Amino acid sequence: MKSFQAIATDLDGTLLRSDGTVSARTRAAVIGAEDSGLRFVIATGRPPRWIAPIVEQLGDRGLVICANGAAVYDPAEHRLVSCVELKAEVVLSLVDEIQEAFPDALLGCEQGFDFSLDESFKQKNQGLVGSWKLEGLRVGPIRSFLDRDVLKLIVRLPSPAAPGSADALQSVVGDRALVTHSIDESFLELSHPSVHKAAAIEQLLSESGIAASQVVAFGDMPNDLEMIRWAGHGVAVANADPLLKAAADEVTASNDEDGVAVVIERLLG
Image (cartoon, rainbow, N blue to C red):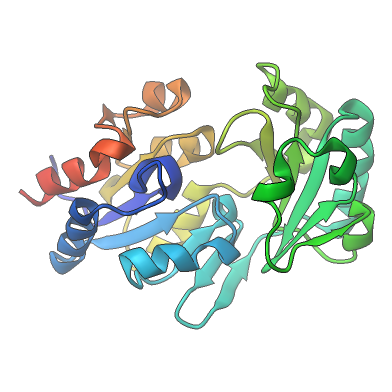
């Protein structure tokens, strides 16, 4: 494998095992990569408020790209370094059209470190009462929270969602937002149309003079697609979505088999 200068990786389903932990082997591989001089970048769909448990396991690895590239977060100072957001007025118009086209959809929004959920979840539920009963969760009419810009608009559809739901939603929102997903098509995420992981990684690494051809990237879901295509060597884990496997230069072992560590160890020789 040719010489590389940086590693960029997704978290859930990729670097992390299915139980959300970082294995000892993976942690050692990441530390070894940094000790050898490689830049290590986390690029995740997680919002900034979900990064602390990763830092606890993996240690402070510097700036983290969050929300599919919409935010760059500094865990050491607990601050957002930069954000690319959907304008509140745009989101208001999207909400109207989404609710008309998908009347069973449950909407939520990420704004900085805040997460808000439409009050209709009390009727629609969709199994979220436990999983989304988070500290600081704000519940109310979704429009009442749209007095400021949005990192991500979440559209939760009844599961299982029909194949092609992401494309159907993209047709509704047009070029006003980019639709992707990091789980399945019942959990769709809308960001500013310029937002994706590759754009954020490119901007972050450009400050160090590192080009796309010098980057190895790892992912598992459609929200990693631009990153996998952009990198000099794109790697999909064995448990990845077929779209990722088709786009990748290599398919490694699964997340539960330390697939990221396997490639890093080979890279380090």
